[in-house]
Image (cartoon, rainbow, N blue to C red; front, side):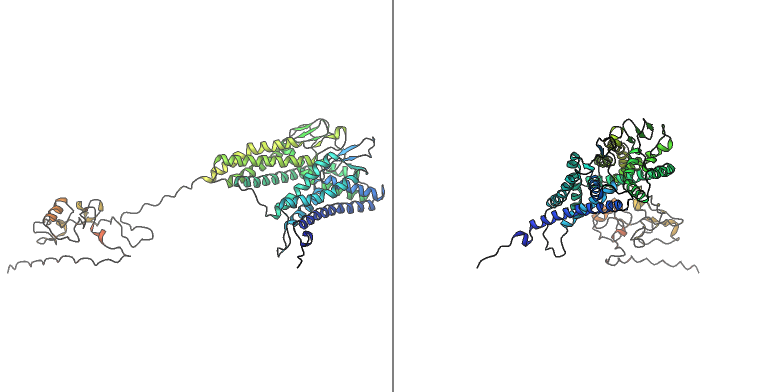
Length: 532
């Protein structure tokens, strides 16, 4: 009988899974490009002065899609006729392509409920999804070369693969459950990095929003100057929304200290504005500081990186209570370096050239903001981490227990079962010297015994017979030499140890023991003589 072997693609093996992942990447690229194309086409249709036809709208959509991936564009339709670069990426525009790649890679490793669908390896999923996406991107780059916004080939070959591969790797990492490195210090440093980055971004956004509200009149004038018809106003509003994350990064860079450049030879820092800025008319740019010398209001923005460094160091210190000081400092320093690298990448994406000449440098300088972030984390975050660790390791001071009163019962679970070792002496009594450290207190025989009578176990002279009372060594030796039988109340005990007391051989309240020996009979007291 002939055995029929199915093809791996038909059977659904690893090759089919890789092909499916590649298709997913291409579909993700098409969805992002299609969404931008619909938006640009709608704006072109609603414009009262359409120019260039539908082909121009499609070229504009392709250019914006590439710009969202960090690719610099080259404008050819300038007034001077010379090509001018455009490298400021609207960061909100990048959210959609990055999310589509992330989801495509994540869905590639998500198995179905029955586990029948084959899955590629994590590295294979990243390569397949990124490969399918980059195939579509290459076609878009070639198409943009014939339009007014051509792609810069250098940045297209550098930033485009980096963004796509990074987003695909993040999707695979999410599908695997977001695992962190095995060392706990590394995982804590990464979490602290995320906390510091979020604090910096939120603080920069608040600072930029406050500045924009302070210069609201200038922003309104700039908006009215560049937006004529309602379609143009809608386009300007959409562009402002897309640049809001850039505004937050600019505010964070301003608080970190290096500030940002406003053209060649112009720098804005909390200390003041240096040089002659070349600022085009735009609503968001109206919030830029224009004072030549900074005031305390401008210096107050330093609270943003300070808070970020404190939160970052505190996050490390709370997790480092059982670590050494060296490991704590290294983890805090690692978080500072990781946060600095992330801020440098965001600064590079938030700034860039807006043209030639004075506008060739615009926005934060990535290496300066990254270095400032590392310095803030090292100078503030590391001491905070060590201080929080030391505070968490302090031992709680034990509370002093109240001293028990003389003669009180023993406190604890056995309270009420074990009597006090030192009973309170009765009024009018004195300690018995024979009791020693045992703390027994007895009454004075001479003071307690009536005249003419004698206590039990004593002779008429008031002396105790040998071996019956005080634990004296001579009396005990005399007992042993005389072969006197052991008495239950003998202070030497059955082993000849004078440190035992009579109550040491009695059973506790929760134990069962032999009955106590009978007490010796008390001799009768003779009646007084009859004098009648």
